[in-house]
Length: 263
Image 1 (cartoon, rainbow, N blue to C red):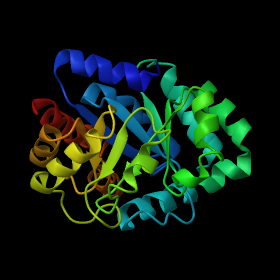
Image 2: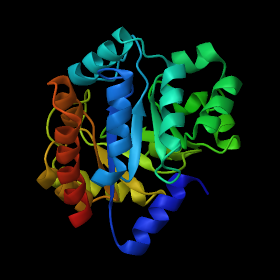
Image 3: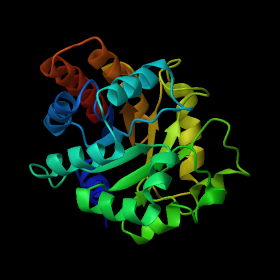
Image 4: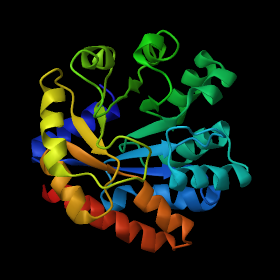
């Protein structure tokens, strides 16, 4: 059992849906992002997705791309991302952290070294968007053996022929991308998402969390009603980009979390 498994078990016992928030590590700088991340659990966040900045983020829209650029310009690295998680863990040993990013920085570090360091830093799961199931031997299977959940993305184009392959070796939860395209694009619609979530759940017992296109508490609630929870990233990162204070960012997050928890 990982912290992710424990969190979903606790939420289920309470009859609540999950709220997951995404933050780019090091945006706009290390100290500010650490302050925000430390405040997320108190704002109602159940699971933290911590973005690892990368120079070629092909799946991300302008908002997350620019966040990565700001982070890299401020000197953020994979090591500093792990340092941030380590610092967070000094005050919180319960809230799950999922690293989200691309394979290149992990490959450059060496898979075994990375997994050892991630585990030591208190990381609970990985979302690596450019490693398909056909490459499970690269990172997915070693990560599972190291005690980390490997979380896979399913999309509107993941048909019934492909879905079992996507779900193989997936653990923790399934991240359903509610719209076709890049992050921060069109709004997610519960009427479209509900049948897709049901289809995925017919193939797995894992929780299905929905992200992309969720920008308001109302939308967070609507999506969580038809899934096991909602994920918000770009809308939060937009506030950070606008220079909002940590308190303002966390107040916005709290509203999104309350929406998901009402579902």
